[in-house]
Structures are given as C-alpha cells and as structure tokens.
Image (cartoon, rainbow, N blue to C red; front, side, top):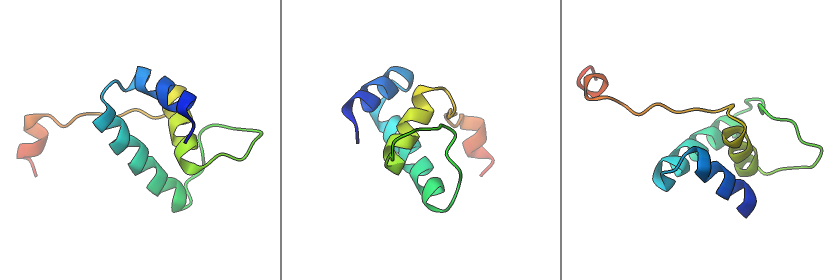
Length: 72
C-alpha cells in the first residue's frame, strides 16, 4: 500500500477506522470481479486502487443513523 495514497485518502475520510472499513469492503468487491473506477498505466494492488478511488471521490460512504439501525 502506497503511503502517499493512504495520506491523501485520509484527507477525504479523516477517521482511520472508517477508512479501513471502506477500503476493506472495496477490496473484497474488486477481488470478486468488480471493475476499478479509476484508470492507471501501472499495475496497482487492489488496496491502492481502493485508496485512489476514495482520493478521487469515486467511492463514498454513509454512516448508519439510529433509525437505520432500528429497522434491522
């Protein structure tokens, strides 16, 4: 995982715990065959792809509200 990608992604998702969850979820999707939302001339790991997607605003997240949790 590239440190510069990690630092840039942390500027978008400022909570490291949330960033780990977003990256982890996206890496699972990429491993299952989802297409990357960013292009690169170099070969990137799934983790780096996920971080670039976050940096470029291609991936977002939404925190669950108490109402959402109550519906479960």
